[in-house]
Image (cartoon, rainbow, N blue to C red):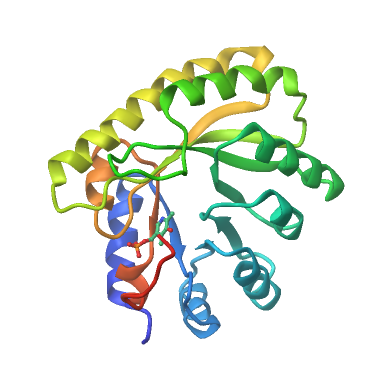
Length: 232
Ligand SMILES: *Cc1c(COP(=O)(O)O)cnc(C)c1O
């Protein structure tokens, strides 16, 4: 299926008007379609499998920016550390330390977002607010010179109930704003909360209304993925 160019232009216009960034989620989609968006000037793409992202990054031009949006296993960090633009789903100090280690080896500073669990569905991914606080408090002492915590990422419940989705995004924005007060503390050089990654195809407008400044959109641009897709 070709890229929905019209949808891309429309979404881009909406987002630009609100200074919101767009990660085009290209998971499961072929190189040809990524190239098509690249040809329109788009550079930020999101993938949730390490192997797939590495393969695609080897083929696409070097100025393509690859966002890792899936659950990252510590043993795979080294594969993406040399080139990843932003890791959206960090949810443990262990993972952060491994990212720091591999970033150092690669001679880079890697930008990361902490994933917060805002949906009412049960999932093993994402931190609750107490866990988030605990993790952030440990960061200054952990000496992580090669990671930069840039903000938060969250996924709302998979539901038609748009009010529930709005409430979840609003809660995340409140947490984000609270953390932004850390930005002025010199002790926390490794954290600079500027990015709030929330919103996907079904709920990005609500997310933007609630203060998102980075959305991750797949199916509106590339068409639906197969129904047996278990990647989200
Ligand atoms: C797949 C995925 C998206 C994009 O989902 P769409 O509904 O296709 O827009 C966004 N964020 C994450 C974390 C995903 O895994």
